[in-house]
Figure 1: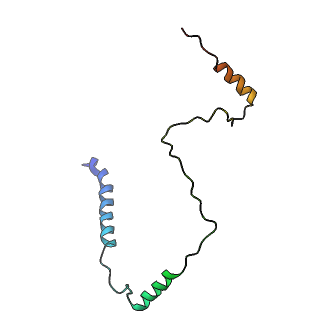
Figure 2: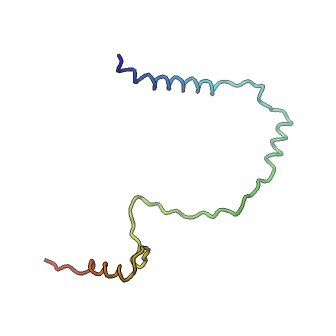
Figure 3: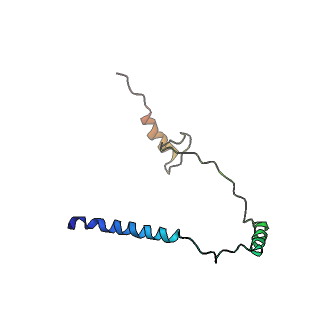
Length: 101
């Protein structure tokens, strides 16, 4: 029986969540609702106001999907900190043709 005590916290949390949802979805009294013509006129005036624009307009940029595939940069671009001559020397030994057996 002691082994089943680990079930108590989830059951209590579920019951508390059900009680909260029941309280949050309850019928509200009509005292808080204001359907008067004055309230509707206030709402109409507020919706008729122009909205303020802030700063510069946002220019949307096209984002390319990555799909999780690594893409190498073009060979002409060198962004590492090594010099071009060192990179050429290191790359030239790797580019030697291998004899075909």
